[in-house]
Image (cartoon, rainbow, N blue to C red; front, side):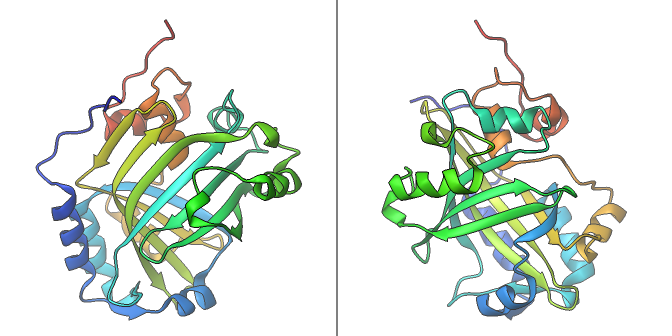
Length: 273
């Protein structure tokens, strides 16, 4: 198994998680039930950013009184793992790489601290909004699709992708903190220590010192979008699945994410040999 290089940084995973925990320690807390009641947003507009941890600290300084942090038990920072499934020819990846409107992603999402696992289908609506469908799944089976999952995939997305051939192609892992603005019914996820592991055993990460932010709203900019814009950050065309696949296999077409890959992942494209 080989490991791809990632951006050199003085921070390690432990120091990054401690810093993120410290930054959110002064925020009010909110329960998972409150998040689901006010800002679940399964149909939504996502805006994604990659920012240095200290810029994120500035965002919290400006918005801290508006935001609450999700806390479950004693935890505010949670371990996530997503397993993505695609066809042998990477149909879903190429749908995204070439900007197809009828694109889809299939994954299992594991919440490693609670042991919960979901099977998820993500697609794009007529207005460009993200539509997510979620179904309970067995944690122990998250790295493969069983017969019931294949049948469900055929029913939900079979018109967009050859579901009988779906196989595991990429695993992503990271730590996540979730912030909520209940007055605006918006939320933002804050991911650190992002790492990728593909079907060939290639690994990348962890991406230390940077935070991957995803603001989630019903359409208009959320308050955090406004602050990020004023600080010079702009939304990126970024998908963990697509970026992960391009990073671990630089031979894949990735022009849509060229700037982001070069800037944040030290990515250099390669030709097939």
